[in-house]
Length: 446
Ligand code: PLP
Image (tube, rainbow, N blue to C red; front, side, top):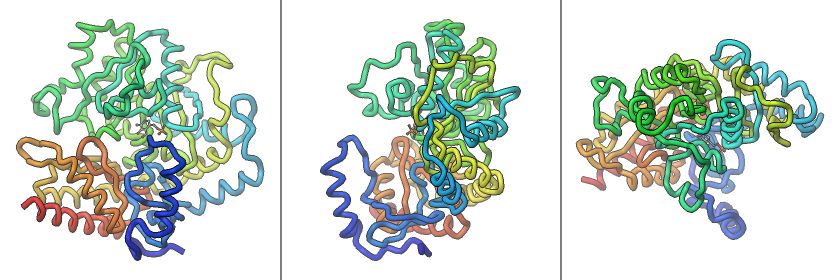
């Protein structure tokens, strides 16, 4: 049974981990990143154990996926029960109850007026592909607007919207035609060198005032695809009016507002969807990651009046797999019964502690976030704001050696996205480890 963490008892990676890694390196694609040599054996709640018996505190949740923590007993029970009945039947062609129940539940939980419909997928990228096709089918308009810094996945349609790291796109062109990227609302590094709020939230007006004057007729734009809070781009919270202004422009011109909640949604920010923090009603919502606590499941929820495609125009063999649907129903119940509230509470605690650290360590340029989606951006110099990318990576690597699993995002941001079951004492432990690492980094720089 897994108990306390961290507990590191071998050099990392240990003997067993080295064996697995050697085989992996030999037989798997060279495109995998592998952030650090962590080889999981099992997990429980916020604690994971590697194949050498070392225990880690997990503040990255398999990239914001393990919403209910590792192997939550209720999710495990639901999946086991379903596994005894049937694994698969193909939702495109046949019926099963959990599929319909989950669709109903998601329509209830998404903040849109009126009737809604759901399409289930296996992943975030596949859900993005679905939304692209839906928007094209429904609006018959050629253009889509997306944002610099955004991440929407790596399949060709989704990749056409993605603009996070150039290497993710290089040598993969041609992309989907008609996709136009504009700057996001990134106040710490304002793309227009303006200051909030004397800027008049220019980032939200750029589409209307510049792009639609010089480049595109808004009546030819089918959709704006936007992350409510940018994830891979650096855990960037846009200014409060950002989504409201863009949505108002979209509404005026018959453009669908498609929010990609793959990373920010599913209770992580303390509300079911991150867009709820901005008081905006989306037209289409894309979900995945935490939706089924780690079983592969994505979903597109759209207002019924937009999900008008005919039978056979879109489908998926595995999308909405019965095991994943059962896991998701249990996950959503757990979110509503307390995990969303815990994310809000624990997020406040973590944010407060990280902001305090920013008072102590010059290297911390910005701390931002909502709930348990928090980014700490490191800079070489607070005046120039030059990104401290190497230092951010060193901290992530050193944290692993101390038994704390972290990930970076953007150029030099450390992200904190623990499972939503995280406890106050686990937050305190993680911050203590981080404080030691920042002291050491500071020492090296002095
Ligand atoms: N959209 C967002 C906002 C994401 O963060 C990701 C993955 O990180 C995706 C889409 C793609 O999801 P997947 O990796 O499941 O295809």
